[in-house]
Image (cartoon, rainbow, N blue to C red; front, side):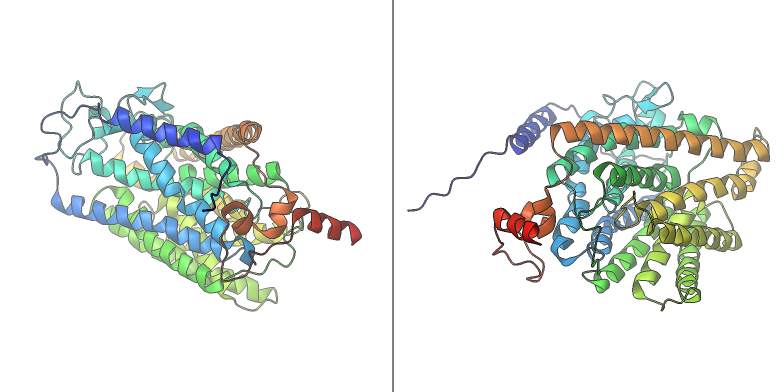
Amino acid sequence: MKIYRHEVSWGWLAVLIGIIVVSILGLRTEVKDGLFELGSTHIWANVAWMITATIFVLMMTPGLSFFYGGMVRKKNVISTMLQSFIVMGFVSVLWVVFGFGLAFGDDICHVIGNPVDFFMMRNVGVGNVTDPASEASQIGLVTTTIPLALFALFQMKFAIITPSLITGAFAERVHFSGYLLFMMLWTILVYCPLAHCTWHPDGLFGMLHVHDYAGGIVVHAASGIAAMVGAMFLGKREDGGAGNKPANVPFVLLGAALLWLGWFGFNGGSSLAADGIAISAFLNTNTAAATAMVTWITLDAVRGRKPSAMGAAIGAVVGLVAITPCAGWVTVGQSIFIALVITVCCNLAVSWKSYSKVLDDALDVFPTHGLGGIIGTLLTGIFAYDFFAQNDPDMISRGEFFFNHVLVMAGVFVYTFAMSWLLYWITDKIVPMRVSKWNEHVGLDASQHNEEYENAVSMELPTESDWIRSTEEN
């Protein structure tokens, strides 16, 4: 009998030990009486809608996998799709252990939550949160018509999709283990603080009257900035992405369709109720996506290109990003204008990026998500003022409202840029963030995962020494 021996991966062994420790700690979590009895203030329509919206938002991550996977070369399809898909596992565990507490736990200095409050989902159930002594009482004030557990689940899906967006920038050259470590650290040190500042009742941004309806700052601007930093830190692909024909355009269309559908839960669910704001967000989301799709392919055609499936898919996603910061707070006419302005800006940014000799953002994450989230947030400071002025007697002036959005966006840019660079650097010291030239040449599907997409990469690969010899001869 032939015995196969494999080298032990100490990094993955540490992950296994961590899972074992977490599972044992989870056995000791106390559950209070009545925590799983539906509360008297819950509205069944809201509960039903938020369950549906949560499912829709989770569907966006597989949609992103198809969207990104179809854009890369055939030798990197599986690895690119897995980088998005795997986040559903790692971040879900992180969120229930202490991530939800960091984002929505008892406020600490208006910038972060207490991770102990909701450790292992302690005090997070389906009942009412009315006990002032409960750590859950503060965040329970966000909404009393749905269970806190449902709110935590809904927010979990946002935490999953955000780091997944980053992966497109350093596609085809990132080391899988290094990416996982960075993604976990980034979720803890960038996403959770931004989510707390934005959506916690005592968060810093709310105190400044800066509002983000569904993630213009927290999701898109943050992920786009981190993506730009990642592309800069890892450097350009060895071949510069030469011959970068999309592996599967139907995958891109399928991904865009799933994202469009999931975005109805993303934006519509952010009202946390089955109400008029949710309907307005639903309508504005579809309108913005449609406007951006038409605008994008029109811009391409005006510049002499043929209308393409890729252009239509990218344009639709840009429109969805554009309306996210203010989906429930603006009119349909305003949503069309917002989508138009941001689509023009993003389309030009993608064109300009293609001439860059420094930035190899492989799938245009910053020009679409980053820039779209930033401009969308600034336009929120213009168009969302009337909504809040009608409902807040202590509302600040229109000029101050806009200035605060500019100020916060600048601060978020600096913090996210600096912290992301630091985390890339720390991760690279522990686990290399970039694969070797050889691994990049044969493709990450084969070199990182020993898998292939439709026989596009033969598993009978030449040896690394043969490849080096052939490159030297050429």
